[in-house]
Length: 121
Length: 110
Image (tube, rainbow over all chains, first blue to last red; front, side, top):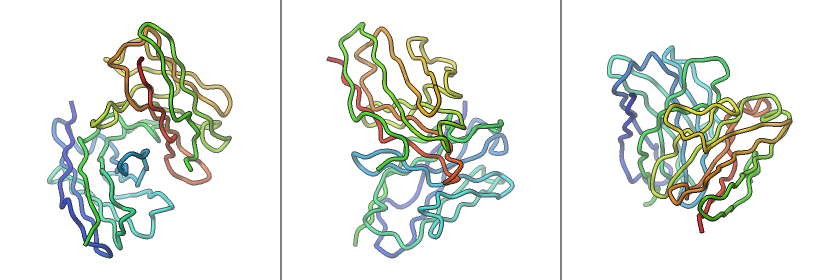
């Protein structure tokens, strides 16, 4: 069973860059695609984007100009960077796995526990 | 305003059957698979239904999904107290080139 764990600073200052890492255990990082999803307190889920182990990415158009994802297969980790953050980026950030099958868009079978990132000075 | 539309709340008594709707358009539900997620309070979402109507291993057959045109539904039969959670639908949107979620439905077991 795949286990995902997010890590990174819980507090980021406005205008700075949010950086999170997701560590994958219990399976090979090459066996899946990987996504980031966020959820502001009391609100719904928002897809941030996905990355393939080849390095190819797809980002939510609403965040595309500020998002960078990367993967480190040697460490079984993938990462998220979100630049120029504001209070509106305060949310619980989840990493999730996506099966490598046709039509798996929206298919998140394993999730991390989530990490709260607060944007505040 | 979410791309997929869900009722904000639903409720039922133990043993009842409840349904949660998810309305979209031709660019998302109308042309792609629908997924459903269950999120109990304070926890991460969990995959409940994939590819419109398939249940992952371990999900009880009390949960079922369906899709027709640009709408989808999640049905929960034999309602139990532990089903109290937020439920989200999701699909790929061809126009946005993004995964879109419904706004979520809070299910209360009375």
